[in-house]
Image (cartoon, rainbow over the protein chains, first blue to last red):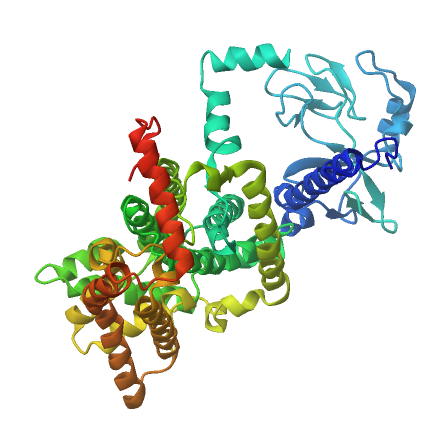
Length: 176
Length: 421
């Protein structure tokens, strides 16, 4: 500690020591108050029952090729699309301009496309516009069978949620 | 930069002078003991209750069908919900404990006497507001005790002559405690703490006008006052540390001690629990209510048992400073009163039976008898102690010293108004 200002015997006060104790106590108190605030901040994060909704399980057994199933995950629609071989080949060979991304980076297994069904423009839910892809009813954005945007105003492709296969015919959406 | 910001603010708002006059230079008697910490602690608990309450309200649902389950949701699902709820439920008990000690200190040291009557009365208003807030908050978990406690207390208003039944129905918004009652209790339970803050500000303005009393009871001269900061900020914070050890001990190890087991059963309007008891802080008043065999009489007696404290500045006619310090009769009455309140509290917690009813009636009689006797005993003490100079030498010296200084100041044309009595 600070030894260059020794006790001069008149006041019995070691300034350096006082200063150290004062700052140390203040720092300790500030850390304690911050720690006491944490439970209050944490209480505003999703509670356990909300977190339970953060995982969705989808059985793919009844999903025929060419069909889309919409499931709810975290309160959002998720499109699970069983693609035909033709559609897979088609998506594999095409590139998009607005948000270029190759098809195999967007799927775990090429037969199944899993995307969050929320238009990246302003949050509407796109409708299936035939075998070619999705059309957003709000402002006319178009997405292909890989969920990639092919016509604006949407700026980016449909988001791919975190998911994994549990066996051949079951997927678990969400971080587990 | 800092200096210019400070002067910019000071030209528009009295920040520096406020901090100087009310904190760093605020004169505080140097002889304050630890009983003077409890006002600060009450302020701390008020802030804690508001903070935890606001966060609980983010998850609580004030509807008869959902209230009980939403409390379970807080306890089980919400992150740290159990902690926030136990802080709030234990905090209610801590609030009353701190306030009762604060009041007992005021009574013991005679701090309610001139010039601090308005402090005592604003404190009295705060006590009643606190009781109302606690009572309404107790309904919110919608358990059996919540429900039947609210049913009983709202029924008390039925003792009002002629329009009693209408008042009860109006209070409940229903013919028994129901959904409407719960919703309005929630709204008012959220409102009242902010009204309490307003009255606390009045309490503080009055305090900073008359300054703190002290164990000697004598208004001290400047030489015996020290600045509030750092001496009493650090003393208050040390007291807070001790308080938090006890408080956190209760929150983390015995939180259910303050929650009746019966309240873990959802409210059932068709079945009253075998044994209804209020929270511990209402027990003495509840015992007084039960001791009077007449419905209206009981309600009046219970209300009087709280309101009668407001009469203390009139009932105590003794001019001896320092309350019970220098007054043997007053001191004996104080301890007798404390014992009587504890006895009433014990009786309030027991199921009624013949013996306890008689003990309760006697204790209720003494509760009010103490107040009734005070004008006579205090007058007698005044004659015996002050006029015959039978006070301890130290007290007499102090009184003489301080009054000499004050007379001197008067002679010089004192400029400080607050030093003249």
